[in-house]
Amino acid sequence: MNRKQTASPSQQAAHSLPIPVHFNQNWLSELNTRLNKGGPWGDYRLFELAVKAEEVSLVPSFDDIQCLKHLHDLTPLPHQIDTARKVLFEMSGRAILADEVGLGKTIEAGLILKEYMIRGLVSKVLILVPASLVLQWVRELNSKFGIPAVAQKKAYSWQNDVVVASIDTAKRDPHQEILLSNDYDMIIIDEAHKLKNKKTSNYQFMLKLRKKYCLLLTATPVQNDLSELFNLITLLKPGQLGRQGDFAANFVVDKRLAKNEDQLKDELAKVMIRNRRGEGPVQFTKRKVTNINLTLSPEEQALYEGVTSFVKDQFHSAGGNLSSMFSMVTLQREVCSSRDAVFVTLVNLSKKLPPDSPWRDRIWDLVANIKAIKSNTKAEKTMELIKEMNEKVIVFTEYRATQEYLLNYFRERGLTAVPYRGGMNRGKKDWMMDLFRGRVQVMIATEAGGEGINLQFCHNMINFDLPWNPMRVEQRIGRVHRLGQQNDVKIYNLATLGTIEEHILNLLHEKINMFEMVIGGLDVILERFEKQESFEKSLTKIMLESSSDEEIHHKMQSLSQNLNSIKQEVEHMEDTAPVKKAVGKGGLLK
Image 1 (tube, one colour):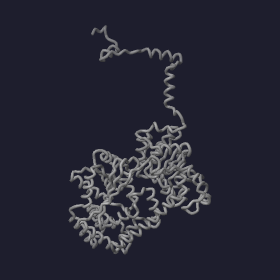
Image 2 (cartoon, rainbow, N blue to C red; image 1 turned 45 degrees about the vertical axis):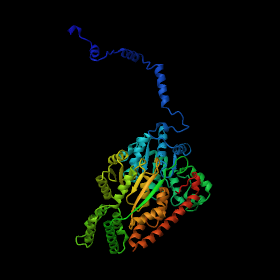
Image 3 (tube, rainbow, N blue to C red; image 1 turned 120 degrees about the vertical axis):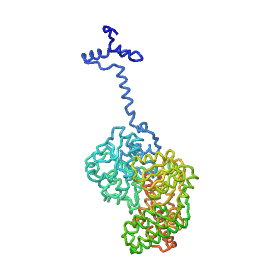
Image 4 (cartoon, helix red, strand yellow; image 1 turned 90 degrees about the vertical axis):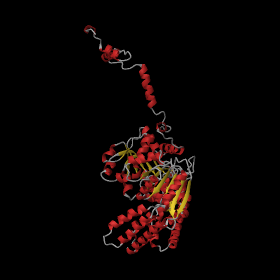
Protein backbone atom coordinates (compact mmCIF):
# COMPACT_ATOMS: atom_id res chain seq x y z
CA MET A 1 0.00 0.00 0.00
CA ASN A 2 1.24 3.53 -0.90
CA ARG A 3 2.25 5.61 2.14
CA LYS A 4 -0.07 8.45 0.98
CA GLN A 5 -3.03 6.05 0.92
CA THR A 6 -2.74 4.80 4.50
CA ALA A 7 -6.15 3.55 5.74
CA SER A 8 -7.80 5.04 8.81
CA PRO A 9 -7.93 2.94 12.02
CA SER A 10 -11.66 2.38 11.58
CA GLN A 11 -11.10 1.17 8.01
CA GLN A 12 -8.32 -1.14 9.18
CA ALA A 13 -10.64 -2.56 11.87
CA ALA A 14 -13.39 -3.05 9.33
CA HIS A 15 -11.04 -4.85 6.92
CA SER A 16 -9.76 -7.12 9.70
CA LEU A 17 -13.29 -8.31 10.63
CA PRO A 18 -15.29 -10.83 8.59
CA ILE A 19 -18.25 -8.38 8.42
CA PRO A 20 -18.23 -4.59 7.97
CA VAL A 21 -18.63 -2.56 11.19
CA HIS A 22 -19.67 1.09 11.12
CA PHE A 23 -18.87 3.30 14.11
CA ASN A 24 -21.28 6.14 14.93
CA GLN A 25 -19.41 8.90 16.73
CA ASN A 26 -22.45 11.21 17.05
CA TRP A 27 -23.06 10.20 20.69
CA LEU A 28 -19.85 11.94 21.76
CA SER A 29 -20.90 15.18 20.10
CA GLU A 30 -24.37 14.90 21.67
CA LEU A 31 -22.87 14.23 25.09
CA ASN A 32 -20.68 17.33 24.86
CA THR A 33 -23.71 19.41 23.85
CA ARG A 34 -25.73 18.17 26.85
CA LEU A 35 -22.83 18.73 29.21
CA ASN A 36 -22.60 22.32 28.04
CA LYS A 37 -26.38 22.85 28.38
CA GLY A 38 -26.81 20.89 31.63
CA GLY A 39 -29.08 18.27 30.08
CA PRO A 40 -31.57 16.91 29.29
CA TRP A 41 -30.40 13.53 30.57
CA GLY A 42 -33.24 11.41 29.25
CA ASP A 43 -36.37 11.39 27.16
CA TYR A 44 -39.96 10.30 27.73
CA ARG A 45 -39.34 6.84 26.29
CA LEU A 46 -36.55 6.17 28.79
CA PHE A 47 -38.71 7.61 31.56
CA GLU A 48 -41.50 5.12 30.77
CA LEU A 49 -39.05 2.21 30.81
CA ALA A 50 -37.65 3.33 34.17
CA VAL A 51 -41.16 3.56 35.65
CA LYS A 52 -42.04 0.08 34.42
CA ALA A 53 -38.80 -1.32 35.87
CA GLU A 54 -39.68 0.17 39.26
CA GLU A 55 -43.23 -1.20 39.07
CA VAL A 56 -41.90 -4.72 38.46
CA SER A 57 -39.65 -4.52 41.53
CA LEU A 58 -42.39 -3.18 43.82
CA VAL A 59 -44.43 -5.44 46.11
CA PRO A 60 -47.91 -5.23 44.53
CA SER A 61 -49.79 -5.68 47.81
CA PHE A 62 -49.03 -6.18 51.48
CA ASP A 63 -52.42 -7.83 52.03
CA ASP A 64 -51.03 -11.33 51.37
CA ILE A 65 -47.65 -13.03 51.55
CA GLN A 66 -45.32 -12.28 48.64
CA CYS A 67 -42.50 -14.75 49.20
CA LEU A 68 -44.00 -17.69 47.28
CA LYS A 69 -42.91 -16.37 43.88
CA HIS A 70 -39.34 -15.95 45.14
CA LEU A 71 -38.80 -19.58 46.19
CA HIS A 72 -36.41 -22.00 44.48
CA ASP A 73 -37.35 -25.67 43.99
CA LEU A 74 -39.89 -25.51 46.80
CA THR A 75 -43.67 -25.74 46.79
CA PRO A 76 -44.90 -25.21 50.37
CA LEU A 77 -47.86 -27.22 51.60
CA PRO A 78 -51.14 -25.44 52.41
CA HIS A 79 -50.71 -25.75 56.20
CA GLN A 80 -47.24 -24.21 55.95
CA ILE A 81 -48.53 -21.22 53.98
CA ASP A 82 -51.43 -20.78 56.42
CA THR A 83 -48.97 -20.81 59.33
CA ALA A 84 -46.84 -18.11 57.68
CA ARG A 85 -49.93 -15.94 57.10
CA LYS A 86 -51.07 -16.31 60.68
CA VAL A 87 -47.68 -15.41 62.16
CA LEU A 88 -47.43 -12.39 59.86
CA PHE A 89 -50.93 -10.96 60.18
CA GLU A 90 -52.15 -12.15 63.59
CA MET A 91 -49.10 -12.73 65.77
CA SER A 92 -46.87 -9.79 64.84
CA GLY A 93 -43.92 -12.03 64.03
CA ARG A 94 -43.63 -13.69 67.47
CA ALA A 95 -44.87 -17.27 67.61
CA ILE A 96 -44.27 -20.81 68.82
CA LEU A 97 -44.37 -23.17 65.83
CA ALA A 98 -45.40 -26.42 67.50
CA ASP A 99 -46.21 -28.74 64.60
CA GLU A 100 -45.74 -32.44 65.19
CA VAL A 101 -42.47 -33.93 64.00
CA GLY A 102 -42.11 -34.16 60.23
CA LEU A 103 -44.67 -31.51 59.24
CA GLY A 104 -42.08 -28.95 58.20
CA LYS A 105 -41.52 -26.38 60.94
CA THR A 106 -38.25 -25.44 59.23
CA ILE A 107 -40.13 -24.63 56.01
CA GLU A 108 -42.63 -22.51 57.94
CA ALA A 109 -39.83 -20.58 59.63
CA GLY A 110 -38.12 -20.08 56.26
CA LEU A 111 -41.33 -18.73 54.71
CA ILE A 112 -41.84 -16.27 57.55
CA LEU A 113 -38.23 -15.09 57.44
CA LYS A 114 -38.29 -14.70 53.65
CA GLU A 115 -41.53 -12.70 53.81
CA TYR A 116 -40.19 -10.26 56.38
CA MET A 117 -36.99 -9.83 54.36
CA ILE A 118 -38.96 -9.07 51.18
CA ARG A 119 -40.96 -6.47 53.07
CA GLY A 120 -37.76 -4.81 54.21
CA LEU A 121 -38.55 -5.41 57.88
CA VAL A 122 -35.77 -7.90 58.61
CA SER A 123 -32.10 -7.93 57.69
CA LYS A 124 -30.12 -8.93 60.81
CA VAL A 125 -31.02 -12.52 61.77
CA LEU A 126 -29.74 -15.04 64.34
CA ILE A 127 -30.77 -18.69 64.08
CA LEU A 128 -29.87 -21.03 66.97
CA VAL A 129 -30.22 -24.77 66.36
CA PRO A 130 -28.68 -28.06 67.61
CA ALA A 131 -25.05 -28.31 66.52
CA SER A 132 -25.77 -31.30 64.28
CA LEU A 133 -28.32 -29.29 62.27
CA VAL A 134 -26.37 -26.06 61.67
CA LEU A 135 -25.20 -26.96 58.17
CA GLN A 136 -28.57 -28.43 57.21
CA TRP A 137 -30.29 -25.15 58.11
CA VAL A 138 -27.70 -23.19 56.13
CA ARG A 139 -28.16 -25.38 53.05
CA GLU A 140 -31.96 -25.23 53.16
CA LEU A 141 -32.15 -21.47 53.63
CA ASN A 142 -29.77 -20.92 50.73
CA SER A 143 -31.11 -23.52 48.30
CA LYS A 144 -34.85 -23.32 48.97
CA PHE A 145 -35.35 -19.71 50.02
CA GLY A 146 -32.43 -17.85 48.47
CA ILE A 147 -31.50 -16.52 51.91
CA PRO A 148 -27.70 -16.02 52.19
CA ALA A 149 -27.28 -17.73 55.56
CA VAL A 150 -23.82 -18.66 56.84
CA ALA A 151 -22.70 -21.08 59.55
CA GLN A 152 -20.90 -19.49 62.48
CA LYS A 153 -17.27 -20.65 62.55
CA LYS A 154 -15.21 -17.78 63.93
CA ALA A 155 -15.95 -14.71 66.04
CA TYR A 156 -16.05 -12.54 62.91
CA SER A 157 -18.87 -14.71 61.47
CA TRP A 158 -21.36 -12.82 63.64
CA GLN A 159 -20.90 -9.80 61.34
CA ASN A 160 -22.93 -11.53 58.61
CA ASP A 161 -26.58 -10.62 58.22
CA VAL A 162 -28.01 -14.16 58.60
CA VAL A 163 -26.03 -16.45 60.91
CA VAL A 164 -26.83 -20.03 61.97
CA ALA A 165 -25.12 -21.35 65.11
CA SER A 166 -25.57 -23.72 68.02
CA ILE A 167 -26.80 -22.22 71.27
CA ASP A 168 -23.89 -23.84 73.13
CA THR A 169 -21.47 -21.89 70.95
CA ALA A 170 -23.48 -18.68 71.15
CA LYS A 171 -23.56 -18.56 74.95
CA ARG A 172 -19.79 -19.05 75.35
CA ASP A 173 -17.26 -16.24 75.54
CA PRO A 174 -16.31 -14.30 73.50
CA HIS A 175 -19.45 -14.97 71.44
CA GLN A 176 -21.99 -14.16 74.16
CA GLU A 177 -20.71 -10.62 74.61
CA ILE A 178 -20.86 -9.99 70.85
CA LEU A 179 -24.43 -11.28 70.53
CA LEU A 180 -25.75 -9.40 73.54
CA SER A 181 -24.43 -6.17 72.04
CA ASN A 182 -26.34 -6.72 68.77
CA ASP A 183 -29.89 -5.71 67.90
CA TYR A 184 -31.54 -8.50 65.91
CA ASP A 185 -34.52 -8.08 63.63
CA MET A 186 -35.39 -11.76 64.02
CA ILE A 187 -34.23 -14.68 66.15
CA ILE A 188 -35.24 -18.27 65.35
CA ILE A 189 -34.68 -21.08 67.86
CA ASP A 190 -35.02 -24.74 66.88
CA GLU A 191 -35.69 -27.42 69.53
CA ALA A 192 -36.97 -24.62 71.77
CA HIS A 193 -38.37 -27.05 74.37
CA LYS A 194 -34.80 -27.31 75.66
CA LEU A 195 -35.32 -23.78 77.02
CA LYS A 196 -38.30 -24.74 79.18
CA ASN A 197 -36.43 -24.27 82.47
CA LYS A 198 -36.04 -20.56 83.23
CA LYS A 199 -33.26 -21.24 85.75
CA THR A 200 -30.83 -22.53 83.11
CA SER A 201 -28.07 -20.40 81.60
CA ASN A 202 -29.49 -21.07 78.12
CA TYR A 203 -32.86 -19.58 79.08
CA GLN A 204 -31.35 -16.53 80.74
CA PHE A 205 -29.07 -15.95 77.75
CA MET A 206 -32.00 -16.09 75.32
CA LEU A 207 -34.01 -13.72 77.49
CA LYS A 208 -31.25 -11.10 77.26
CA LEU A 209 -30.95 -11.17 73.46
CA ARG A 210 -32.48 -8.07 71.86
CA LYS A 211 -34.94 -9.00 69.13
CA LYS A 212 -37.88 -7.52 67.21
CA TYR A 213 -39.36 -10.78 65.90
CA CYS A 214 -38.93 -14.27 67.35
CA LEU A 215 -39.87 -17.82 66.32
CA LEU A 216 -39.61 -20.80 68.70
CA LEU A 217 -39.76 -24.22 67.02
CA THR A 218 -40.67 -27.31 69.05
CA ALA A 219 -42.76 -30.45 68.61
CA THR A 220 -43.24 -30.73 72.40
CA PRO A 221 -43.84 -27.35 74.03
CA VAL A 222 -45.23 -29.06 77.13
CA GLN A 223 -43.51 -32.19 78.42
CA ASN A 224 -44.02 -32.32 82.16
CA ASP A 225 -46.05 -29.42 83.49
CA LEU A 226 -47.73 -26.16 82.54
CA SER A 227 -44.92 -24.03 83.96
CA GLU A 228 -42.82 -25.07 80.95
CA LEU A 229 -45.43 -23.52 78.70
CA PHE A 230 -45.40 -20.34 80.78
CA ASN A 231 -41.60 -20.13 80.49
CA LEU A 232 -41.60 -20.54 76.70
CA ILE A 233 -44.31 -17.94 76.16
CA THR A 234 -42.58 -15.52 78.53
CA LEU A 235 -39.39 -15.97 76.53
CA LEU A 236 -41.34 -15.20 73.37
CA LYS A 237 -43.53 -12.38 74.71
CA PRO A 238 -42.62 -11.27 78.23
CA GLY A 239 -45.75 -10.43 80.18
CA GLN A 240 -48.15 -12.20 77.80
CA LEU A 241 -49.36 -14.47 80.62
CA GLY A 242 -48.58 -12.07 83.47
CA ARG A 243 -46.37 -13.08 86.37
CA GLN A 244 -45.90 -16.76 87.13
CA GLY A 245 -47.87 -16.49 90.37
CA ASP A 246 -50.78 -14.90 88.52
CA PHE A 247 -50.61 -17.56 85.81
CA ALA A 248 -50.67 -20.35 88.40
CA ALA A 249 -53.57 -18.75 90.27
CA ASN A 250 -55.61 -18.19 87.10
CA PHE A 251 -54.92 -21.35 85.12
CA VAL A 252 -53.25 -24.14 87.14
CA VAL A 253 -54.94 -26.71 89.40
CA ASP A 254 -51.75 -28.76 89.65
CA LYS A 255 -48.72 -28.86 87.39
CA ARG A 256 -50.48 -31.01 84.77
CA LEU A 257 -54.09 -29.93 85.17
CA ALA A 258 -55.47 -26.57 84.04
CA LYS A 259 -58.53 -24.52 84.92
CA ASN A 260 -60.31 -21.62 83.19
CA GLU A 261 -59.69 -23.49 79.99
CA ASP A 262 -61.49 -21.14 77.62
CA GLN A 263 -59.47 -18.16 78.79
CA LEU A 264 -56.22 -20.15 78.60
CA LYS A 265 -57.24 -21.30 75.13
CA ASP A 266 -57.58 -17.69 73.99
CA GLU A 267 -54.17 -16.75 75.40
CA LEU A 268 -52.39 -19.70 73.79
CA ALA A 269 -54.03 -19.10 70.42
CA LYS A 270 -52.36 -15.67 70.31
CA VAL A 271 -48.85 -17.12 70.29
CA MET A 272 -48.92 -20.77 69.26
CA ILE A 273 -49.69 -22.79 66.12
CA ARG A 274 -49.77 -26.59 66.03
CA ASN A 275 -50.49 -28.74 63.00
CA ARG A 276 -50.80 -32.48 63.48
CA ARG A 277 -50.37 -35.61 61.43
CA GLY A 278 -53.64 -36.91 60.05
CA GLU A 279 -55.26 -33.47 59.96
CA GLY A 280 -55.87 -31.63 56.73
CA PRO A 281 -54.49 -32.78 53.37
CA VAL A 282 -51.09 -33.89 54.71
CA GLN A 283 -51.03 -37.67 55.01
CA PHE A 284 -48.00 -39.67 56.10
CA THR A 285 -47.22 -43.07 54.74
CA LYS A 286 -47.32 -46.08 57.06
CA ARG A 287 -44.56 -47.88 58.91
CA LYS A 288 -44.36 -51.59 58.25
CA VAL A 289 -42.23 -53.33 60.86
CA THR A 290 -40.71 -56.78 60.41
CA ASN A 291 -38.81 -58.35 63.30
CA ILE A 292 -36.37 -61.05 62.25
CA ASN A 293 -35.12 -63.35 65.00
CA LEU A 294 -31.89 -65.14 64.15
CA THR A 295 -30.12 -68.07 65.78
CA LEU A 296 -26.41 -67.57 66.33
CA SER A 297 -23.98 -70.12 64.96
CA PRO A 298 -22.38 -72.39 67.61
CA GLU A 299 -19.15 -70.34 67.40
CA GLU A 300 -21.03 -67.02 67.80
CA GLN A 301 -23.05 -68.45 70.70
CA ALA A 302 -19.85 -69.60 72.42
CA LEU A 303 -18.43 -66.08 72.11
CA TYR A 304 -21.63 -64.54 73.50
CA GLU A 305 -21.66 -66.85 76.50
CA GLY A 306 -17.95 -66.26 77.10
CA VAL A 307 -18.39 -62.48 76.99
CA THR A 308 -21.47 -62.65 79.25
CA SER A 309 -19.55 -64.69 81.84
CA PHE A 310 -16.61 -62.27 81.62
CA VAL A 311 -18.88 -59.24 82.13
CA LYS A 312 -20.72 -60.81 85.08
CA ASP A 313 -17.44 -61.75 86.76
CA GLN A 314 -16.16 -58.19 86.29
CA PHE A 315 -19.38 -56.86 87.83
CA HIS A 316 -19.05 -59.03 90.93
CA SER A 317 -15.35 -58.22 91.18
CA ALA A 318 -16.26 -54.51 91.21
CA GLY A 319 -18.59 -55.14 94.16
CA GLY A 320 -21.71 -54.52 92.10
CA ASN A 321 -20.63 -50.99 91.20
CA LEU A 322 -22.70 -50.06 88.14
CA SER A 323 -20.86 -46.85 87.29
CA SER A 324 -17.79 -48.75 86.12
CA MET A 325 -19.73 -51.34 84.12
CA PHE A 326 -21.43 -49.50 81.26
CA SER A 327 -18.47 -50.04 78.92
CA MET A 328 -18.40 -53.73 79.86
CA VAL A 329 -22.06 -54.26 78.98
CA THR A 330 -21.23 -52.78 75.58
CA LEU A 331 -19.28 -55.98 74.94
CA GLN A 332 -22.46 -58.04 75.13
CA ARG A 333 -24.19 -55.72 72.71
CA GLU A 334 -21.23 -55.82 70.32
CA VAL A 335 -21.32 -59.63 70.15
CA CYS A 336 -24.83 -59.24 68.74
CA SER A 337 -23.42 -56.94 66.06
CA SER A 338 -20.11 -58.32 64.78
CA ARG A 339 -16.97 -60.09 65.95
CA ASP A 340 -14.98 -57.10 64.69
CA ALA A 341 -16.73 -54.73 67.11
CA VAL A 342 -16.02 -57.06 70.05
CA PHE A 343 -12.40 -57.51 69.03
CA VAL A 344 -11.70 -53.76 68.96
CA THR A 345 -13.19 -53.27 72.44
CA LEU A 346 -11.34 -56.25 73.92
CA VAL A 347 -7.99 -55.08 72.55
CA ASN A 348 -8.53 -51.58 73.94
CA LEU A 349 -9.54 -53.07 77.29
CA SER A 350 -6.43 -55.25 77.49
CA LYS A 351 -4.20 -52.22 76.89
CA LYS A 352 -5.59 -50.56 80.01
CA LEU A 353 -4.87 -53.56 82.26
CA PRO A 354 -1.54 -54.09 84.07
CA PRO A 355 0.66 -56.81 82.50
CA ASP A 356 0.10 -59.22 85.40
CA SER A 357 -3.70 -58.83 85.51
CA PRO A 358 -5.53 -62.20 85.50
CA TRP A 359 -8.20 -60.59 83.31
CA ARG A 360 -5.74 -60.43 80.40
CA ASP A 361 -5.81 -64.22 80.01
CA ARG A 362 -9.61 -64.16 79.98
CA ILE A 363 -9.53 -61.53 77.25
CA TRP A 364 -7.18 -63.54 75.04
CA ASP A 365 -9.37 -66.61 75.52
CA LEU A 366 -12.23 -64.54 74.11
CA VAL A 367 -10.03 -63.39 71.23
CA ALA A 368 -9.43 -67.08 70.45
CA ASN A 369 -13.21 -67.55 70.32
CA ILE A 370 -13.43 -64.63 67.91
CA LYS A 371 -10.87 -66.21 65.58
CA ALA A 372 -12.98 -69.38 65.48
CA ILE A 373 -15.93 -67.49 63.98
CA LYS A 374 -15.96 -67.81 60.20
CA SER A 375 -19.36 -66.26 59.38
CA ASN A 376 -21.78 -63.57 60.53
CA THR A 377 -25.39 -64.68 60.82
CA LYS A 378 -26.74 -61.13 60.64
CA ALA A 379 -24.61 -60.14 57.66
CA GLU A 380 -25.83 -63.18 55.73
CA LYS A 381 -29.46 -62.30 56.47
CA THR A 382 -28.89 -58.64 55.59
CA MET A 383 -27.41 -59.61 52.23
CA GLU A 384 -30.41 -61.84 51.58
CA LEU A 385 -32.86 -59.02 52.42
CA ILE A 386 -31.08 -56.50 50.21
CA LYS A 387 -31.14 -58.86 47.23
CA GLU A 388 -34.85 -59.53 47.74
CA MET A 389 -35.65 -55.80 47.94
CA ASN A 390 -33.71 -54.77 44.85
CA GLU A 391 -34.30 -51.19 46.05
CA LYS A 392 -32.33 -48.60 47.97
CA VAL A 393 -31.85 -49.45 51.64
CA ILE A 394 -30.10 -47.82 54.57
CA VAL A 395 -28.47 -50.09 57.15
CA PHE A 396 -27.95 -48.66 60.64
CA THR A 397 -25.34 -49.90 63.10
CA GLU A 398 -24.02 -48.46 66.34
CA TYR A 399 -20.43 -49.49 65.75
CA ARG A 400 -17.78 -48.21 63.37
CA ALA A 401 -16.07 -51.63 63.29
CA THR A 402 -19.32 -53.27 62.18
CA GLN A 403 -19.75 -50.61 59.51
CA GLU A 404 -16.29 -51.39 58.10
CA TYR A 405 -16.99 -55.12 58.28
CA LEU A 406 -20.24 -54.77 56.33
CA LEU A 407 -18.64 -52.56 53.68
CA ASN A 408 -16.03 -55.27 53.05
CA TYR A 409 -18.58 -58.09 53.31
CA PHE A 410 -20.82 -56.52 50.68
CA ARG A 411 -17.90 -55.54 48.43
CA GLU A 412 -16.58 -59.12 48.39
CA ARG A 413 -20.01 -60.26 47.21
CA GLY A 414 -20.33 -57.71 44.43
CA LEU A 415 -22.61 -55.25 46.23
CA THR A 416 -21.59 -51.59 46.29
CA ALA A 417 -22.29 -49.71 49.52
CA VAL A 418 -21.21 -46.33 50.89
CA PRO A 419 -20.52 -45.36 54.52
CA TYR A 420 -21.97 -42.38 56.37
CA ARG A 421 -20.64 -41.58 59.81
CA GLY A 422 -19.71 -38.88 62.25
CA GLY A 423 -16.18 -37.64 61.74
CA MET A 424 -16.56 -37.31 57.99
CA ASN A 425 -16.20 -33.74 56.81
CA ARG A 426 -19.20 -32.09 55.20
CA GLY A 427 -17.81 -32.48 51.68
CA LYS A 428 -17.40 -36.23 52.03
CA LYS A 429 -20.83 -36.62 53.62
CA ASP A 430 -22.40 -34.77 50.70
CA TRP A 431 -20.45 -36.96 48.28
CA MET A 432 -21.63 -40.16 49.97
CA MET A 433 -25.21 -38.87 49.93
CA ASP A 434 -25.00 -38.03 46.22
CA LEU A 435 -23.70 -41.53 45.46
CA PHE A 436 -26.50 -43.11 47.49
CA ARG A 437 -29.09 -40.90 45.83
CA GLY A 438 -27.69 -41.95 42.47
CA ARG A 439 -26.26 -45.33 41.52
CA VAL A 440 -25.42 -46.93 44.89
CA GLN A 441 -28.06 -49.23 46.40
CA VAL A 442 -26.92 -49.39 50.04
CA MET A 443 -25.80 -46.86 52.63
CA ILE A 444 -24.39 -48.03 55.97
CA ALA A 445 -24.76 -45.33 58.62
CA THR A 446 -23.67 -45.06 62.23
CA GLU A 447 -25.62 -43.19 64.88
CA ALA A 448 -23.51 -40.03 64.76
CA GLY A 449 -23.53 -39.99 60.98
CA GLY A 450 -27.30 -40.32 60.81
CA GLU A 451 -28.06 -37.08 62.63
CA GLY A 452 -29.76 -34.47 60.51
CA ILE A 453 -29.89 -36.41 57.22
CA ASN A 454 -33.06 -36.61 55.15
CA LEU A 455 -33.61 -39.76 53.10
CA GLN A 456 -37.13 -39.46 51.70
CA PHE A 457 -35.92 -41.06 48.46
CA CYS A 458 -35.30 -44.33 50.36
CA HIS A 459 -38.06 -46.29 52.10
CA ASN A 460 -36.26 -49.42 53.32
CA MET A 461 -34.17 -49.55 56.48
CA ILE A 462 -32.47 -52.34 58.39
CA ASN A 463 -31.59 -52.01 62.07
CA PHE A 464 -28.54 -54.27 62.05
CA ASP A 465 -28.31 -53.73 65.81
CA LEU A 466 -30.57 -51.83 68.19
CA PRO A 467 -29.64 -48.91 70.46
CA TRP A 468 -30.84 -49.13 74.04
CA ASN A 469 -32.17 -45.59 73.87
CA PRO A 470 -35.60 -45.65 72.15
CA MET A 471 -35.17 -42.03 71.06
CA ARG A 472 -32.20 -43.04 68.93
CA VAL A 473 -34.25 -45.79 67.31
CA GLU A 474 -36.95 -43.25 66.45
CA GLN A 475 -34.37 -40.81 65.12
CA ARG A 476 -33.14 -43.53 62.77
CA ILE A 477 -36.65 -44.13 61.47
CA GLY A 478 -37.25 -40.39 61.19
CA ARG A 479 -34.48 -40.15 58.58
CA VAL A 480 -36.76 -41.92 56.07
CA HIS A 481 -40.29 -41.61 57.51
CA ARG A 482 -40.88 -37.90 57.11
CA LEU A 483 -42.70 -35.31 55.04
CA GLY A 484 -42.05 -35.98 51.36
CA GLN A 485 -41.84 -39.78 51.71
CA GLN A 486 -44.01 -41.25 48.96
CA ASN A 487 -43.93 -44.90 50.03
CA ASP A 488 -44.71 -46.92 53.11
CA VAL A 489 -41.51 -47.30 55.13
CA LYS A 490 -40.34 -50.86 55.67
CA ILE A 491 -38.34 -51.38 58.87
CA TYR A 492 -36.44 -54.61 59.43
CA ASN A 493 -35.15 -55.26 62.95
CA LEU A 494 -32.54 -57.98 63.31
CA ALA A 495 -32.26 -59.65 66.72
CA THR A 496 -30.37 -62.71 67.91
CA LEU A 497 -32.27 -65.24 70.00
CA GLY A 498 -31.11 -65.92 73.55
CA THR A 499 -29.27 -62.60 73.85
CA ILE A 500 -29.81 -59.10 75.25
CA GLU A 501 -31.15 -58.06 71.84
CA GLU A 502 -34.10 -60.40 72.01
CA HIS A 503 -35.22 -58.84 75.30
CA ILE A 504 -34.69 -55.27 74.04
CA LEU A 505 -36.64 -55.83 70.82
CA ASN A 506 -39.46 -57.48 72.74
CA LEU A 507 -39.63 -54.47 75.08
CA LEU A 508 -39.52 -51.83 72.34
CA HIS A 509 -41.87 -53.51 69.89
CA GLU A 510 -44.23 -55.81 71.75
CA LYS A 511 -44.52 -53.97 75.07
CA ILE A 512 -44.49 -50.24 74.31
CA ASN A 513 -45.19 -50.32 70.55
CA MET A 514 -42.23 -48.02 70.02
CA PHE A 515 -41.95 -48.42 66.27
CA GLU A 516 -45.46 -47.06 65.73
CA MET A 517 -44.97 -43.94 67.86
CA VAL A 518 -43.65 -40.60 66.71
CA ILE A 519 -40.92 -38.72 68.47
CA GLY A 520 -43.21 -36.09 70.01
CA GLY A 521 -44.94 -38.67 72.21
CA LEU A 522 -41.91 -40.81 72.87
CA ASP A 523 -39.65 -38.14 74.31
CA VAL A 524 -42.35 -37.01 76.76
CA ILE A 525 -42.70 -40.58 78.06
CA LEU A 526 -38.96 -41.08 78.36
CA GLU A 527 -38.38 -37.76 80.08
CA ARG A 528 -40.92 -38.65 82.77
CA PHE A 529 -39.45 -42.13 83.17
CA GLU A 530 -35.89 -40.79 83.42
CA LYS A 531 -36.68 -38.48 86.32
CA GLN A 532 -35.65 -41.51 88.41
CA GLU A 533 -32.83 -42.95 86.28
CA SER A 534 -31.93 -43.17 82.61
CA PHE A 535 -33.55 -45.80 80.44
CA GLU A 536 -30.17 -47.24 79.49
CA LYS A 537 -29.08 -47.45 83.13
CA SER A 538 -32.29 -49.33 83.97
CA LEU A 539 -31.53 -51.87 81.25
CA THR A 540 -27.92 -52.21 82.39
CA LYS A 541 -29.04 -52.95 85.96
CA ILE A 542 -31.45 -55.60 84.74
CA MET A 543 -28.80 -57.32 82.64
CA LEU A 544 -26.09 -57.30 85.31
CA GLU A 545 -28.17 -58.04 88.40
CA SER A 546 -30.27 -60.86 86.93
CA SER A 547 -29.05 -64.41 87.44
CA SER A 548 -31.15 -66.04 84.72
CA ASP A 549 -33.13 -65.38 81.55
CA GLU A 550 -36.33 -65.84 83.54
CA GLU A 551 -35.33 -63.08 85.96
CA ILE A 552 -34.45 -60.78 83.05
CA HIS A 553 -37.84 -61.49 81.50
CA HIS A 554 -39.67 -60.74 84.75
CA LYS A 555 -37.82 -57.43 85.29
CA MET A 556 -38.37 -56.37 81.69
CA GLN A 557 -42.09 -57.00 82.17
CA SER A 558 -42.06 -54.69 85.18
CA LEU A 559 -40.18 -52.02 83.21
CA SER A 560 -42.66 -52.18 80.34
CA GLN A 561 -45.61 -51.84 82.74
CA ASN A 562 -44.00 -48.71 84.19
CA LEU A 563 -43.54 -47.24 80.70
CA ASN A 564 -47.09 -48.09 79.69
CA SER A 565 -48.56 -46.42 82.77
CA ILE A 566 -46.64 -43.23 81.90
CA LYS A 567 -47.82 -43.54 78.30
CA GLN A 568 -51.46 -43.77 79.41
CA GLU A 569 -51.01 -40.79 81.73
CA VAL A 570 -49.60 -38.70 78.87
CA GLU A 571 -52.43 -39.76 76.55
CA HIS A 572 -55.01 -38.85 79.21
CA MET A 573 -53.35 -35.49 79.69
CA GLU A 574 -53.45 -35.03 75.92
CA ASP A 575 -57.18 -35.76 75.78
CA THR A 576 -58.08 -33.39 78.61
CA ALA A 577 -55.57 -30.58 78.13
CA PRO A 578 -56.91 -27.11 77.29
CA VAL A 579 -53.93 -26.51 75.04
CA LYS A 580 -55.41 -29.13 72.74
CA LYS A 581 -58.39 -26.89 72.15
CA ALA A 582 -56.25 -23.79 71.88
CA VAL A 583 -54.59 -24.93 68.69
CA GLY A 584 -57.34 -26.86 66.98
CA LYS A 585 -57.88 -30.59 67.19
CA GLY A 586 -54.28 -31.33 68.11
CA GLY A 587 -52.76 -31.01 71.52
CA LEU A 588 -49.34 -29.96 72.71
CA LEU A 589 -48.35 -32.90 74.77
CA LYS A 590 -47.77 -35.42 72.07
